Image (cartoon, rainbow, N blue to C red; front, top):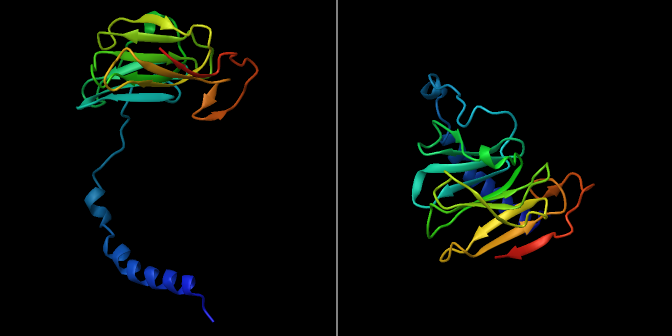
Length: 179
């Protein structure tokens, strides 16, 4: 005897299968499409990203070994904006919802960072604003109404997302910090 759950699964599968077949697309429609790189010409991967609320063309990315990059044209052109800070490893980026000119960068991902930096002019200039001894800033959240209130997540070692791959130099200040 077939269980009720198996019967329901079979009936749902029979009802969905014709729709899936009907949604197939003729590959000739995509024959002239070509892959292209969208993003800065840099080595490695992206460790964090942030967009500007209400502006679908402006984004920031941080890389574990290459600083912070910005695009204002939806990814056609990217430019480095954090080189003068001399901190290559980026763990988090956050843009203030109430004032998109305010951008925070948390340093330290696979290399030890130097705390949190803030720009009040959309990334043209930066100043260190604290947590210099924490080593690895893994997350930043800006209060949606007050751009001066920020939560910073401090990890215990370099990470890929939430997975720690080493902790031979853990931060004694790990946890959540608030301005």
